[in-house]
Length: 304
Image (cartoon, rainbow, N blue to C red; front, side, top):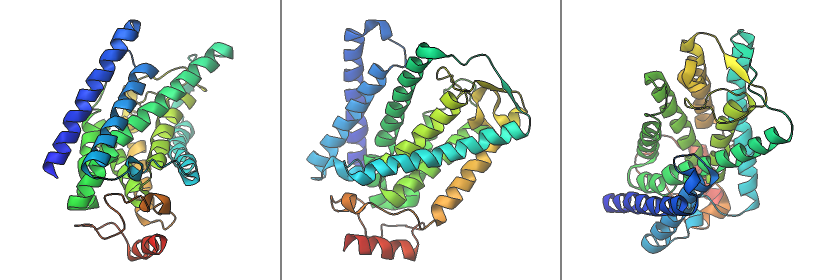
């Protein structure tokens, strides 16, 4: 497993540097900016890396990572969006009920606002897909096959939290919440093997927080908001300048999401993805403390 993981990381970094260099050459005015061109090139690099590792090394189709173009994939994305939206909306609603939100003047109106929001929306979808495919795609399946879901969820969550460690205003609470978010996303992926679902959840999390409400996302202002609110409550609960991801309200919501995801029988693996032969198929992987007997029976019946 070790050399495969190392090869994946090296190849991904090389392709990302190559793709970003191409963006610099052809889109020189956007150097240093977070743009669709930049994030899109990272997505292409990650897809190419996944194709090389899955097709060339594992002799499997990259679609078995959970990106198969099936009707269920579209439903999974929509379900994931709804789940992420509900979680973040609950946090924003709790802030409003506590009197910790005030309306700001950052919201735009008219055609300019619509165009900006569309651009930011596409950017957030691409960013979510890139992070999920890069972290919870091939590396997750490789780690789960070798050490079980606890190892895969733990390791990918640590990487996910580490990638946000340099964001503006980050603190230990923010890192801890990002780690919890990684655990939630990892559990969702383990139970469904659908990158569409976790991408939908990840995208809705950022979009609801940054575009719908206008609150900072991991310390960043992502664009013109729909509502345009400002959190002026205690930073311990609201996250202060870092945004809700640095506050205890998000901690509680994420823990509730983890508990629900771990116990619900409503999540299952897509038979179409299982038929493609993912690395973590339908057998019990080493060190699996997560899957319930009912899950095993359901997955086995799907495979049959």
